[in-house]
Image (cartoon, rainbow over all chains, first blue to last red; front, side):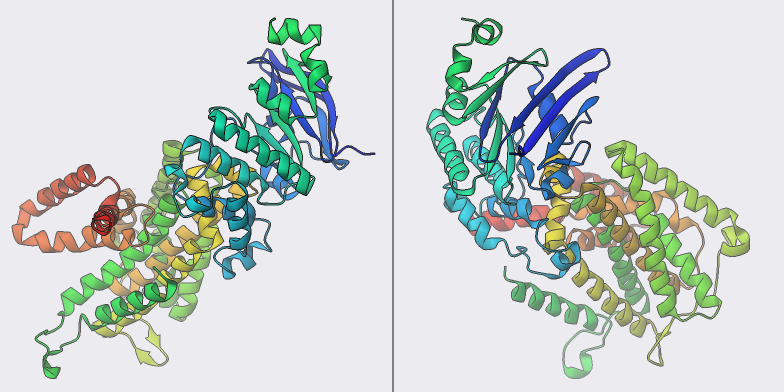
Length: 247
Length: 322
């Protein structure tokens, strides 16, 4: 079976610093893969190389067998690949509902048709459904900038799914979210994975969150994969314990 | 506010503005109408507001920088003057001005794909100076510092617009049309994409918004508004020389947008009002008027950083909450 995402021998250097060194892995449809590693291990650089924010120095990335190396993020999004960022990236002056509409509108017909078509690009009902799914209905008409940090994190995650993406890369979705909201976020992501067969790749520092959410983990250290397997396997891997968990 | 309400308010304002130069005393209303100079100033305000709307699209909605709007007004004005003097109809000159400035706007937008903020401002500033040098030095076509005179006002369906009130109505009609077009754009998904470009281009790109294309579109449309304003400016003043298209007026367009309320729909009209009408009202103070004007502008900038429209909507919201 062809993998949905194939990452082959990705390398990325910044001057003399090699941030990612020959990383290869596959992600299959419907899988939730976690990428963990200590600070500076190259996780975000790897994400940026996969998602076109950075051009890898070497290596290829394929989605559904199609080479997507070097494509711009907007082109990737149109191929069904979306992402969230480590730091909050909502549009504070737009309402929560408009943030969601924006997240899906570029997939609705031609650009010219969007200019002359409905103001909500035909996405009003879908935005409302997504608000409901992430339990943000009451906040739909509030400006995103006025929501709490946790609510903005939920909105940020919801935006990644508005375009019906098949592959979503989540960069530290749990960062800064309180424990109560964290449970809700995990449960929502699991439900989306179940219902839509959406595939996730998750970078996360919160071990409890990532171990509970992901079916498989990759551990990076100094730009290399040092271990991979199920959460239980990774947790007990002596190499990981030495390099990352530290106990 | 519903679309219907907005359109009705717009229509009401249009009727009110159309009546400004009309003597209403004959129907029992104690309003003698604006005189020739007042009508000219009001027409100039409309033309300036069209150019300022373009700057607002580039700066206020799309979050880019431009110090070149006066150059685009100049391109439109010279193209219209030259072509109408050569015998082409005004409609052709107007369309050509819009098209040329749209294309040049795309070219000027390319640096915005690489540089941002004040670096971008300097690129547009260089373009502005370049255009001004062409207007001043290429005498064979622009008339140089002596300018081009006797620019004819157009006719509409056989009706001459030489009369100042008719020409005012003509400009008012075009302003209303261009205002409606821009309103349509900024409330459409395109407007949302422009906002996304301003607030967070990195995130916008990751959501499928083609940041490059929308940046170029903002520059192209905003510059075309400058070109169309120039195309109306030439027959309004009937004589053009390079001075209104220099760097100073470009800075003034930026000031209008900031003072009116950057990224607000009515901001350019209010800002253009401050820039065009306020100096006229202050003329009674003779040589002091520029000093008073400068102090007023400084105070406005310091006290209402989100512009007059921003201040008004803040006060309105507070009142509604109370």
